[in-house]
Amino acid sequence: MRAIQIAELAGPDALRLVDLADPRPDHFASPGAGVVIDVHAAAVSFPDVLQSHGRYQFQPDLPFVPGGEVSGVVVEAAGAGDLRPGDRVAAMSLIGGMAERAVAPPHLTFRLDERMDFAAGAALVLNYHTAYFALRMRGAVCEGERVLVHGAAGGLGTAAVQIARALGAHPVAVVSSDEKERVAREAGADQVVRSDGPWREEVQRIAGGGVDVVFDPVGGDRFTDSLRALREDGRLLVVGFTGGSIPEVRVNRLLLRNISVVGVAWGAYVVRKPDICRQIGEELGRLVATGDVRPIVGTRLPLDRAAEAMRLIEDRRAVGKVVLDVREG
Image (cartoon, rainbow, N blue to C red; front, side, top):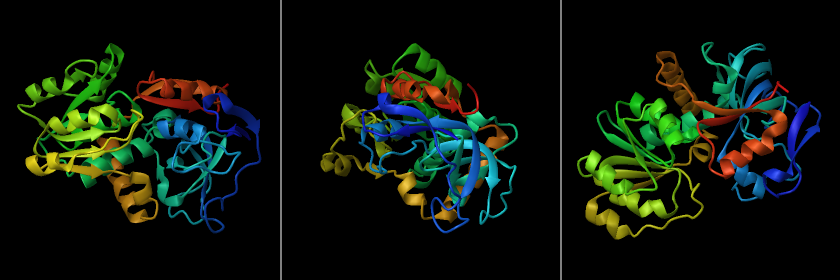
């Protein structure tokens, strides 16, 4: 099979297209425990970029095939419940996704709605499961609340905007350009503010003093202003640090204003909790059927241009989800 391989931790420039043997179904655990998938599309995300530099918390031994988000057709599904060969699926392969064939754990493999193409399917699991876990299960977002979403034009940000709307909340998007504003509005943002302006003051004006929840995958120097953008009883959801630096919080800010900072680590939490994975998967399946969830795919590239796809994310030029069309080119 054709696959992208990382043999040295030198960033996207180190990616190489190689021929490898097909992965075994016992890639993750006991024999028959993995779902073997003919990959049609593989998504690219910020963790992939970090992993190519050796800066991600999960760092496999070299050489390895990157990529954790795939969609395609089941080849083998022993021990995978009601999945059968020929089923269209979206899955988290955890690693090895940027290849013509991958293996995913059964509890992270979900049937793909017939109305959704493979590119959208590749954008479904990581971003939407994370957004649902963050907003519903960690942030307890309620109908009528205002939710501020940083990085609202990316794959995770557009997912958070859509999940917030599906929960009956009012998403306010923070973006950095006209093109990203267009994408955030397409995702369903009620209001959009620009990160290169006085966004906190504008958010407080829009929300009548502050928002109820901040969804923050950026971190960095936005963190303190995000706290200030919260109203009393507000919650700041720490989802990641694409801004580079990991912020610190002075806890007197939390005490004096009765606000909370909540950690969100979907992968680490659910990987050993198949029941929660299925619960989130079922709810997202319902939201796909109602049209509330519709992944926004931005750039689509063939597999042999995976390095270019990673650079788009590294340089913060990506809008929507960046996807590799594995079986084209």
